[in-house]
Image (cartoon, rainbow, N blue to C red; front, side):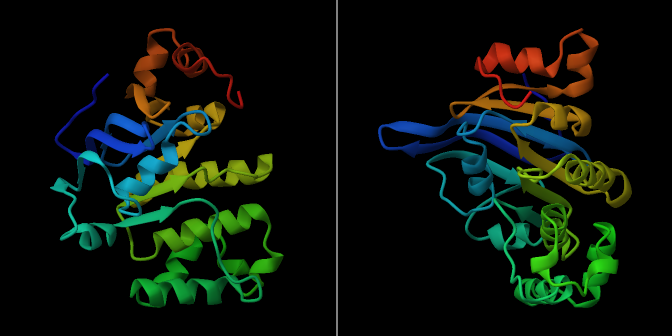
Length: 246
């Protein structure tokens, strides 16, 4: 299903990444409209993280096109485009013996971002009051929120989050969900979130893409899917044959 449009923040056509004699990602196409939450769904090992790493230039694609902010991504403009992008891939790092604020200061320096941005980012993720606490004393949910605050430094317009609810308890999951759904409305930030938790994506996303064995099997607006009497779980099971964290 296509949702190609003029105001896409990200547009991918026929993206592929080989792995030995097979493919980790094969001929994948996706389009993410501005100011939405896009849920990128698939079982573990489906190719979600590989796709995100190719978008961010962390690994090289073998074929296909990637457009961000309407521009073809190349080695010449990748850095400039990444300046408008924030990401959290795999678990957020950090120094446990330093405070949340000190960890943010290190990232601000690395990103070349003014320190005055730190307060704003910490307030968005509701960690400002705990900024002087050592990172080692943070709960897993607080660490994930700090990781998102780090990704928000530099005021990105596009946020890429890989399994941000991983390992969180229900309260932590709810915190992350509320934060993510607030970003398009309050900050005009487009969020691409990969997950294998169907229930979570159903509560957050405006659009969904379902990937299985490296191929995009479905893409569309969540509300349109629901208006046909279908639901995400049913479509997911039909397409992938897998019962993932339902």
